[in-house]
Amino acid sequence: MSPQQSSPQQPPSSGVAGADPVAGVVRPGTGATRHGEYKVAGGKLVVVDLTVDEEARRIAAVSVNGDFFLEPDDALLDLNRSLVGLDVDAGRETIARAVEAGMPDDAQMFGFDAGAVGIAVRRALGHATSWEDHEWEILPPMKLPIALNVALDQVLTEEVGRGNRPPLLRLWDWSERAVVIGSFQSLINEVDADAARATDTTVVRRISGGGAMFMEPGNCVTYSLCVPQSLVDGMSFADSYPFLDSWVMEALREVGVEASYKPLNDIVSAAEGESRGRKIGGAAQKRLASGAMLHHVTMSYDIDAEKMLQILRIGREKISDKGITSAVKRVDPLRSQTGRSREEILETFMEVFGRRYGARPAAIRDAEMVRARQLVEEKFGTEAWTSRVP
Image (cartoon, rainbow, N blue to C red; front, side, top):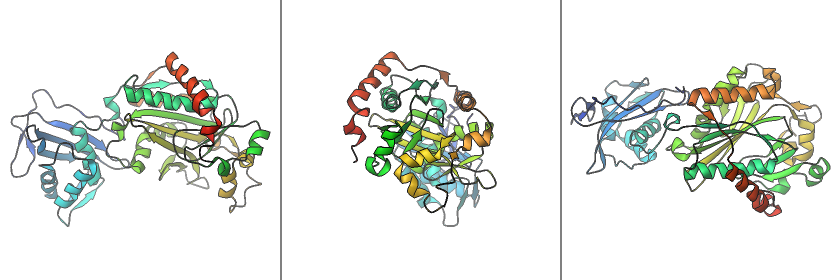
């Protein structure tokens, strides 16, 4: 079971519940409970058992429990009461406000908050899902042109949204020097066009936001998660980033890298010493109207920083006040901190993800590849798309 996410468990078939009209808690009686769990990133487990008045479509009785801390002790009764009567379609923010309004002024919540309760309630009501509610696939790295990689992000996310394939982890590989800019970045501001031509660098734009990625073959570790948005239901964007990458923190530890999230979307070194706080990688997201979302991460394995600074304009500005433009030769946190090959790191990532979520190996389907190639012709390989923000 994931340390970042506990799976919703169904109560035993003989487990029934009724409501205490005073406390609003679930107790043995009649009527089945609904069960939801949420593990706060870096915090505690929040569990919600509740019953619903099906006719009124409102929460009839609730028991909030878990390994969190709450003072004073009887504030738990106030917490339970605050949830009774809420509409079964209430959003996380509505639930959180009800909790905050219903708690006594001197109440103190440790290891969880009202928002975490809201997520657990949403899961109990069936609006949100956990990792264990889904079957997962892993698409191993496959060396492809960079434009085809960004096209596959769109195609595979759309397929997950349509229910045509399970959610998945896809490891990238690519065959040329490239810069991948974010959906909303200015091409002129980010990329030195003359330097890109001189170094035979392909420039493409992806569908997710975030910053530019300088990608030579073998110098980065890049992956995409294509998932249903129900997996992050009720979470803020800031919370969704570390939640979706909780598994990779475990994988990084296994290869000898201590890392943490720096809001909003940076993965940084948590090791002691000079490397502490230095960026290892960054994440980006795109949420589609279909209900699916793309979560994309690139980490530095062994980057030629001088070449990167020739091609990326913003990169020069970012380090201009650090006095290191001429001294930096390589950016290699994963290579230098692990002493492992990029292939070993990719294998560890796949092994950890498979172990945590029961994911099975899979492959890109023929129809998906055909659609991706079509999108390269119509979109990702065109000047109109690449320069859509001049």
